[in-house]
Image 1 (tube, one colour):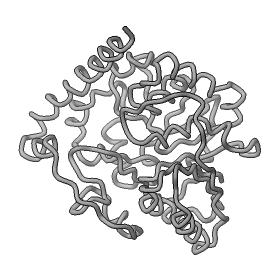
Image 2 (cartoon, helix red, strand yellow):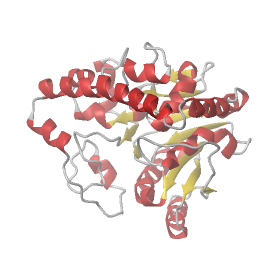
Image 3 (tube, one colour):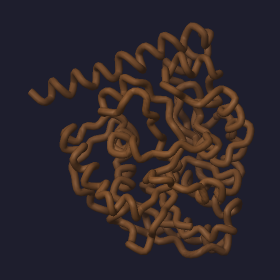
Length: 319
């Protein structure tokens, strides 16, 4: 099974957690790991290479500092994340399917059920994220279509190449002049929303599932046609992949003092330094105010204000 990660040098210790957990839980799938490297030092490459050797796994395939075929700006995360837009070009033709994993994941169980699921005409399979119809409107996605989180994404690379998906990505980047809402996530969804197959959220159990109760999460994020509460509870109780996504309501597990759900799973593998991070205003408000009051107010800002502000700034910049 082919697995691909992308990382910059300062994220290597975090990625090592995901890699060790992958090797420990899915050695039977004989993972062949590819890493898109953005300035990773030789010392840190050796660290991950030794991890693969320690678990008796195949050597890591390093793909060095790729030049992206379009000028991009990000409203979230690192530019290293954009490499996954061009996997059909970056990876050799002999790679027919690949599982993309974000580095901030812990693999808690076998991935067989995910990678054995038929695509049925889809190009990507993953877990739906909590974006609302206003975000979809900005990106040209029908309101009733789910948007996926690419942190765990099973990809049919043969169909990706055949349908020239990367040309679609470039057209979208050019349309938005390189400034795309939600960065690579926005680009992927704008191009692939009609070739996406939704799977059970246990394969990408995101932090927001744990930080909010179901009603508060819906009030905050206002997704359309989302998973039922029962299905999300199944995912929370038995996640196959725990994805430590950013959420203001908790600290990520490599931050000192983090009590985020699943932090002990992360600590089991983590050998890096814990960073210090001051508690932000939104975190303090969330802790002090009832979720029933705070979530709807924040939801209005998230679902109404931010997409409109993005459109305003985009239109202003185009003048």
